[in-house]
Length: 277
Image (cartoon, rainbow, N blue to C red):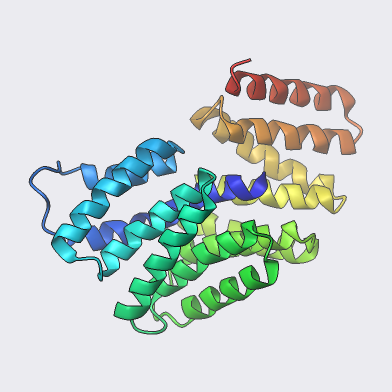
């Protein structure tokens, strides 16, 4: 569903943090110069088994050179927790996220941005369990911590808005979701670029909410803008299937039946191809 898709993209938010932490570590001579970034690349592409193996390797390196009670170790733990959550292992994800949060609380001051990162991951877990109030409280805690930073990263803020928008849409709080996805899209377009994966995700979410609110005319330009980029970057992927599905629904709502059928047929082909049918 929407939550799983968004979580898959959210893995990217750790990119700058992990590279910043790992840059200060002495490299294990067994690890090549590019290996410590491999886990991020695999995670970003949705290759979960490869990402898990690479994160575990980085965890060994971080523990060897920095120890378990170090922010770097906690950062890799949190990334690994996201992988397990995406892979359908919530118990393992919870254990890893709690351990990372414990380390960060022990070694980082209150208000540190990494503690907000932990809160976001714990919010994902609470949301998956259906504990929406707990998830909302964690997101708000993360947002408050983020807003206290002297140099706030707009990209991180956009990701947080996107998280909160997903929670709002899950609870059918559509005006709130629309507001949050709009803010996320603006942040992503400004920082990552108008055609970035971040912007594509937020635009797709915003279009879906617009459809739920009975506003297909708002959804159409968003979807028409992102579809060519999605098809260029990942023509046979889940993102393309979702975009065609939403466009089919949009065209149907506008009573454009032939166009709706074309998009629906394309979505079915993509889903069948992805399932090996």
